Image 1 (cartoon, rainbow, N blue to C red):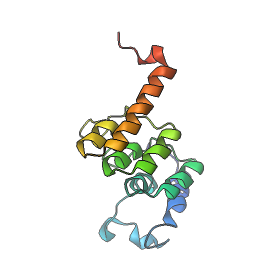
Image 2: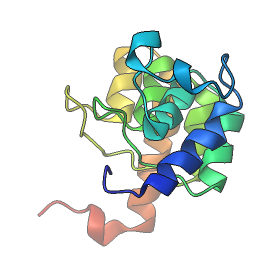
Image 3: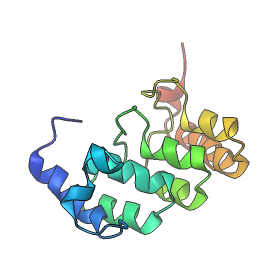
Image 4: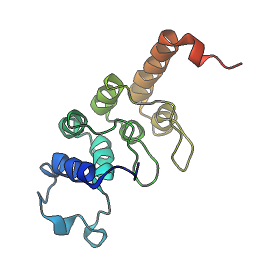
Length: 143
């Protein structure tokens, strides 16, 4: 995802910076000030903290629903592990990939929700996975 243009990174940062506690101050978006995230990471962190409006605004502005944090966690995984049901449901509606295992623990969003005790999030993701299987039965078969 790092191949995205600088303009997309600027767009994503602008889309999410309005809700940051420090506003648009670029000095606060450095590792020395407590966050090393680019626009991609900010999008994923908004999902983790349940900032549904910011996630939706970024998606409406063209952000990829399956963007990852630097550790490989997608927005769906971060929202699921934090128990942010509203964000999980939004990301499901936007067709986030529930099977992604790009993170360092190699766990899906549902597995993370279950591990952290967020049963409602796990149930929502399980229902989404079942809907995908029903919609695409050939692609879901394991031979």
